[in-house]
Length: 496
Image (cartoon, rainbow, N blue to C red; front, side):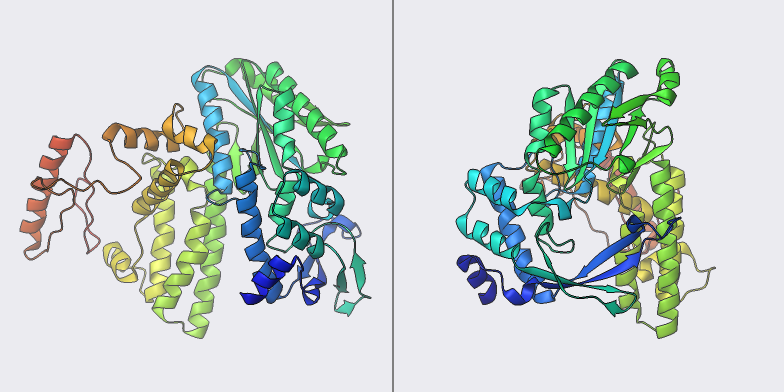
């Protein structure tokens, strides 16, 4: 901590932290490995420098928020925001357009060689113009100066070379520096193309346009692409045409007149033509199909989660890990993968997806306990300490809703206060508003009134459950809302 404070106040990054090693590895699934783009360079950085850079990254993010430097559409490297936030806004815009009988088009653009293309002089000038903290500017200048790297290819170390441009790929401070460097892009384009809305996560940029027909939407997106390329060329940046994608979101019914044009829609981007993807596009790790059913997203996440669970099961059997550690690893490495993006699609009517997740949880429980496949599900979930699938999915959406209520972004606040679309997350928010629940804190019952929480100790199981069921029905009749009940033994009533 003393080193970090001294480095920031002195505006100096330790010289020992400016040396890096680069390992070149193959990208999987490439057809031609004689091409340079078929390889990836991984920088190996010291842990000490990452500790210093992590603190500076937080300070830079706070300074950028204070100065209002970043666009409201930028979700990367900002406290209280995530990639799912940007995806949720995009989904909400599509559902809102459908409600008005319109369609939505998106154009996804990726900055080519983003971090290596950053120019130190332009970044320093931008930070000075925006009157950012002088200590942080001096530290950043030192951070980007006198850097060297040693490239290792198939175990052979090359001669150490100086690095004159760009920011390190694996540094915690690089994303926020790049976000500051490109902070004016969305605001500048939206001034010229007022019908469009820009969303980004560091170097991943998405333009959202809504119109009454395909031709109108395509025209808006083409103007966005032209202005984005113009802005980038003035700052030494380029967009990767090979990674640029486009899609049109339409309803399954009611938009038949757009379907033929959707299949043939073409968007001019620079010197190339981007065809509208009629299957699914992947943005920020979320697969979005033309009807926003998120079927491919769920299937892909479950596939990755099953593969991770199988690998972990093999490891835990081999090395005899204790159940507590197995559970922690299973939750962190498997459930996090399976649930990614579930806030966008989960609906209690999605019985098939819920059952897919429950089967995965059953396998996790058997792996934790070493139980047989014939072990009853209720006992498995109870003894393993895992939560049933419906509760996990509901809790994930509730946490997302609570975070929206306290979000700093005006777009996210609008999504929470005015959930006008039919997106699943908006339905959850509207239910919260309708039932008078708040996410700012717990509404405890006033003195003299019955508490909203009741705990029952099961002595005589049948009698206690029957009494509790009657209490729940009476409570539901009074408040006009559903009552949630959990049983410690993992069981439930026959009627759900």
